Amino acid sequence: MLPEIYADGLGGITFSNGMVRIDLVSITGGEGRDGKLPTEPHHRLVMTPHAFLQSMSMMQDMMKKLLEAGVVRREPQAQQTHQVDPPQGNP
Image 1 (cartoon, rainbow, N blue to C red):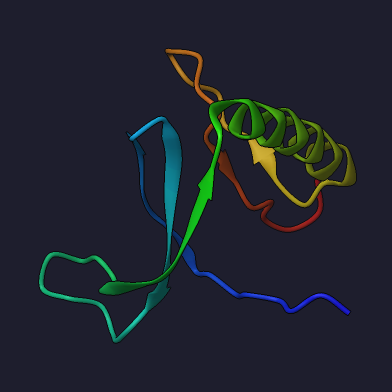
Image 2: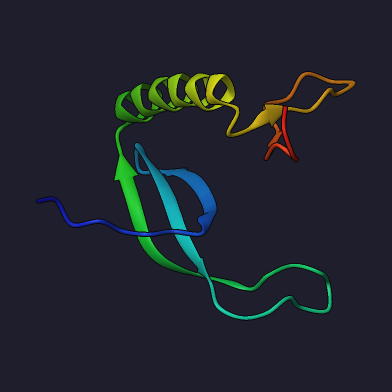
């Protein structure tokens, strides 16, 4: 079995020395004065640009499946974005 790593989110994505670096973060405490939850990086995913593009394609496929299953829904936006919010109540 593969080891699993849990992350509350991404802390940043950078491109350095020919590699894409994605910092995985966990929430470290309650909401701060600015209304944001404090996070701390705990792992970094490093991949080639080609592997990053492949992963983006896989994430887009997963987004379609989540939309179709009603797990998330698109919010109408003035500009086209990929922001989604969890559904509220019955769709």
